Length: 282
Image (tube, rainbow, N blue to C red):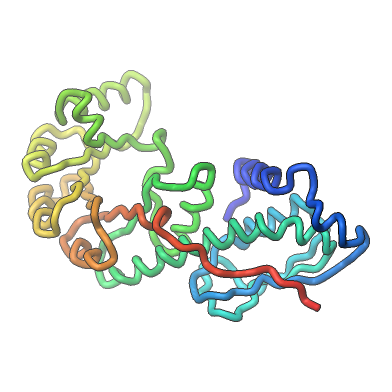
């Protein structure tokens, strides 16, 4: 993962949240000069993500801690694997422990869940996407973990793509008005963004195709048969995306409809963190 200034700031805030005015447990019982060794131990099979984030956590706490990496992001890990070992101040390694694990466990959980979904549709041409259903201030980490798992990112936020959803359409006074207003806004503000519009019926799909002005049509809460019909109507004139109510058990049924993309909110908000621990080497 690229450690940008934004990533550094978010990690610093997370450390401040945890450390506060001091790690009093470690300060009270471990001498300042004490040196030790630790290992990151995998306790559950899955897909690894967050090694670079762990390195940055350690750097911010104590840049003299040495990290010897054995496994990198994207690796399929098994219970008992050792991802890396640490060598340095015992106090400072313990101070970094919880923050390091919080990042790596959640990121690895997301990568693991994503890989499971990707494997379910690997015999198709569909591309799986994440959504904006992320943990506040964790989006950059969570969306990165999705890519480690093998899916792609949808828009990062509200600023890098226009998505006209049901509420936008209703407030604007109809699907055609919403599309026109969005295109006018882009022109007036000299912006170059793709427009995706949410459709709630095959009639909506027809209206969008007749009106034009968008780059992608989303089929929201359609059945696989309805999506198959919608894809046929679109006939590659714009991109197509399926979303809403798609679970593991039905994913493949949607993937074989011919739709270009399927967005899955569960990648980032219906996951379990991967079990791992940071243990002393004695």
